[in-house]
Image (tube, rainbow, N blue to C red; front, side, top):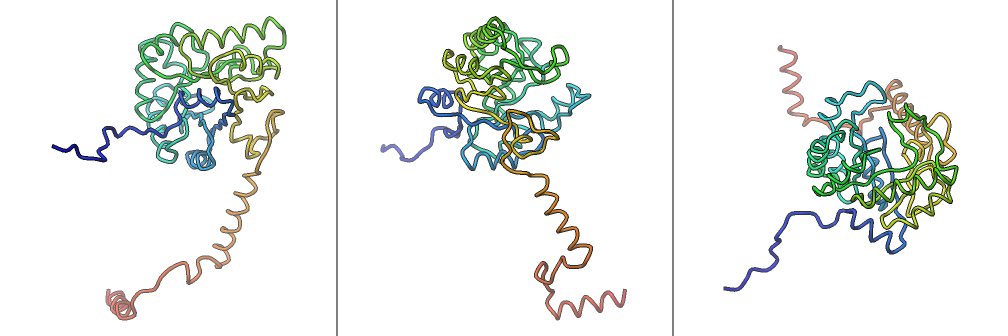
Length: 289
């Protein structure tokens, strides 16, 4: 019996930008472009994908700046990943794991695996210890992490400040990244380190190292959308504003609101008319009610 042709053996996507894809980019010397929509939402992820950005780093859609509770984050994390994946099918989604989900090895694997099945390509466990990272790697949970300045609630202990300014501290950060690499991490960002240190670490490590607020391009660069679109009260020194989004949004909303209030919207072309015979019948029904 002749074997039928064009039968697909798997429904799995072969187009997503996996960690292996990012590794090939580093090996070829191709720069990796990483964005973080922060609180701006999935539409921004879709726009980034349309222009072929490589990595989308995301927290839960409903994560809060303060008073965050683990139960709230767990109830929204998977849905957030699924929602982003609806808008962006190819870009590498790096999900920012809530810290409390990787204080225990089993929980780290449990939640990491679940969120990968929801559509994330890798987990970001900020400040993870080597033993828990290795346990995740041994159980095939992909990680793409972070070294240098640690941003998040952890900065309450150290403050958000420049690091790696001395030779000893710079070497500490290199060893940190090296240990992450050797314990299975597939890549990482490096933050707030001197540009010479950033570039040296990127060149020394096998895995991709992407710079954020670290000067040198390394294997690529990240910028948070709040910086890209000029939405911070004071622009950070590392940021370059490519569009002023808030004035644009306010202009559009303001023009529309003015049209509504003055009667300029909606116009006749913004609706449609009923068949005259049906309209007569309807008017009669309304009169007789």
